[in-house]
Image (cartoon, rainbow, N blue to C red; front, side):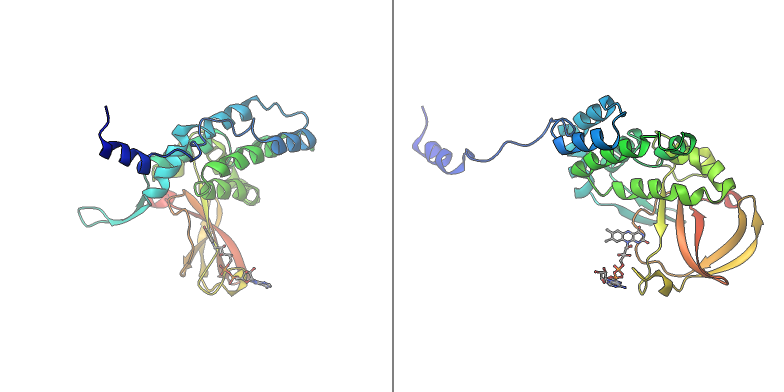
Length: 263
Ligand SMILES: Cc1cc2nc3c(=O)[nH]c(=O)nc-3n(C[C@H](O)[C@H](O)[C@H](O)COP(=O)(O)OP(=O)(O)OC[C@H]3O[C@@H](n4cnc5c(N)ncnc54)[C@H](O)[C@@H]3O)c2cc1C
């Protein structure tokens, strides 16, 4: 038996013509265009792990992480409760879950060592990573900012053999380690970029940050940078490529978050 009031409420409040949530589906199986592109560009690539990744990225669990990471935005903690300056950005656990998933899938720096070591033209590491990255974009794009910066810095780092030697394995490690620690104490590393200034976006020659040479260390000549960067999207990365004006003109500097000498 239903009261007249209950029947009336059902008539006005029941949801009967909305789509069901699109969840627990396979992003790889459902993407014919991606599968065709891989067959054309990387015919030798085994796709079983991409298919498994597609199922994972289409899961309701990962969708919940994506939603929570965006509802609970990062918080800057400038000081600890004892008054020490710390400048730490706290992220929601779901942000870390997404970062861990993208890292485990090798969407950051991991294709490069394989690519560098392979015979020219034989590696499909970049195509595999691009396919995984494309699927992850459907889930949550903002964590892909530090993930893609970590991918993008590797060829530039290789121009300094000592830095590449020290950092490449951490930047390609499949383990995500969010701790703010010296790079050599971590199981996985990420990198960001500090290019843009208030007056210098596309035209980075307008940058005013100054680089002053001061001594050498195992990685080469050291510099002190003084200036004001404008966008710094992933400030909890382990190191950054930073643009600044040196005596020789605009240059790109490797800037670790925790310096060996300061540790
Ligand atoms: C979400 C997000 C994250 C970011 N993260 C980072 C980061 O982590 N680190 C970092 O360093 N930067 C970061 N940036 C900044 C980004 O690199 C700059 O926004 C970009 O370089 C463009 O600079 P701008 O915004 O000053 O635009 P402008 O350079 O002012 O350009 C504005 C418009 O003018 C056009 N334009 C500019 N120059 C020319 C030209 N010569 N000829 C024709 N058209 C032109 C552009 O196409 C654009 O449409 C981020 C930006 C965004 C939106």
